[in-house]
Length: 452
Image (tube, rainbow, N blue to C red; front, side, top):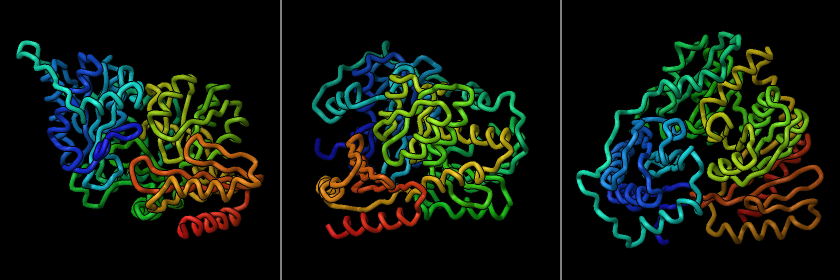
């Protein structure tokens, strides 16, 4: 539908053109109608318009006879956790994640924190919200109630379970919340952990005085990296605004590509769950496959995106799933992504292994060097994808279309895909131990894209 903010696995759009108070109210009505819901969890991030939009959704739900369990200002993973823990019929999180300040959106899960997909929820909801459906009014007697804000005690207890019984080292950790919602959770965890936290841009601030928190962008990494070096910290951690992604810096302040964290976390978890299934995305794959198979696990590929990962995690009963974009999914976290469990898993491994984060990843980086994700703003992504495939398919060992186009040769491979939310083409290149080859192929692909 034209001007629709409904995307492949969530809702994301411009404020106020696509997403506004009437839209949010109608979305609440549509969820009540589509899910035949009795209770829905609702949370929101720190953006200035997120709380009012969450309130409009809440009104739409209550006016349709649904009880609302509010989480208030929180991270997306808290909505996932509380939806499963409370037995609610679904969860809604108002957030635009890492999109620009004039955007907002809604992430949604179903009962048990199951993924909301185009087929089971988002497609029908788009028809209801963007169409002409009239929703039946609910009488005052049947109107839903708003309950008190959900207690975070059980959520914090779940996070602490990750390090329960471990002899944790008194690490010094830089925490860069980026004025998002992660800082509040660090404050709650702090009394229970032996760490010294150096807090950077710690307080949630919807004015985003330091810009959108998105450490995936190289220009957003300097502040955390400098803090690690300045304070002699053991590592640094950074989050996006709704902290469903977390990012790492080693003790030298060097940013660690999320790709290598996937293998490291998988290897750590497989020590206690041998033979477990590990889900990974098509963008960068060789290191993950190599590490997982060496650790006795079973690597399984999935299309990129949280809805797809949540679904395949459940279907395969996988113990862990990791996207190179810093989304990490755990079987004992409702098969959902979390930005808190990964760093707790990493500090556990640092404490038990005696190795630094740098020591744990540098061998893997040398074995499978990669480009990291490189973005190109393009006018016609489908035509470019077709052109790239035509150029590189001859001589390739394997060509896959799980997500965009993945082309594999003996010593190098690449994935190119279009963004689901922005007019971007994204490329990732990796090789078998040859960083120079990676750089050459990045230039080659860049020249082809820029010339088209």
